[in-house]
Length: 379
Image (cartoon, rainbow, N blue to C red; front, top):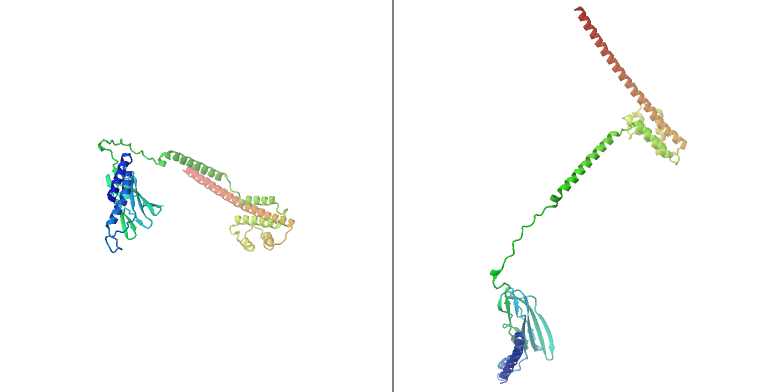
């Protein structure tokens, strides 16, 4: 009688909730919460206790209340929705929450289940939230296994097979009314940057070529206008420049003598091909011993004294430094005078030879002319 009266009161309460205009999902939750303890108590009353020696004595059943809620209950294909399952169990009970492991199922889980626990005196309430998504249309069963509640040696189950969701298609009712978009124009031709800028590059290249030609011609004209200095003129220019440095007045008499001798040796290397700058003093004297243009004795004295100043750090007075530099310049002038006299003699000899050749040629012409006249007179 108690079971029937409980069922009757639960049905009346559900009818009142439906009449008040509440949602259908709320009615299912309240109905499940009202009926679950009655079903559990009735099933527990029919099962005999494993510890009792008599099967006629029923054992007390644990208190269990459960409910489910699908939010929203109607979705489109692929849209997420939430299944909320609440279970009220004793404090010593353990709840195993199921999950969907099949990745090819029409309803799949988007994330692991989240469980929230709330204590209510001797009982506790566990609320599990499933984030799901459906991949088919129609009224689909969610497909979750039953929730298992372990209370001592008993295992109670909360079925979730009744939980369903309605999935609507995203296609229009009549696909034949779909009008395709107009065809797009062809892709514009992408022009490389070098095709757009080649006229400017050609102008720049032409300007660079003209600038290079102008510079090359200017350098060539400058080289032609630049007359190389004679070795004697170069030596005199170096001596004058050395005088302007005023090294003797600055206390650099030894350096002044060394630089003057260096100018002399440079001039000798240009005038006498065998006299190189790498020769020592005695080697240089031996090489130029047979050259009548060079004053060997004066040159040997100057080089030996300059070697003592350069290598033996011999102290030289300002007057002696100027005298040695003057000797170096005098040797250059003497050699240049001899060289010019030699060149003048060669030029005079060449002119005399040319004159003799011209006179001989003229005499031969006169003889040939006289012979030709005499022959014509005899005839």
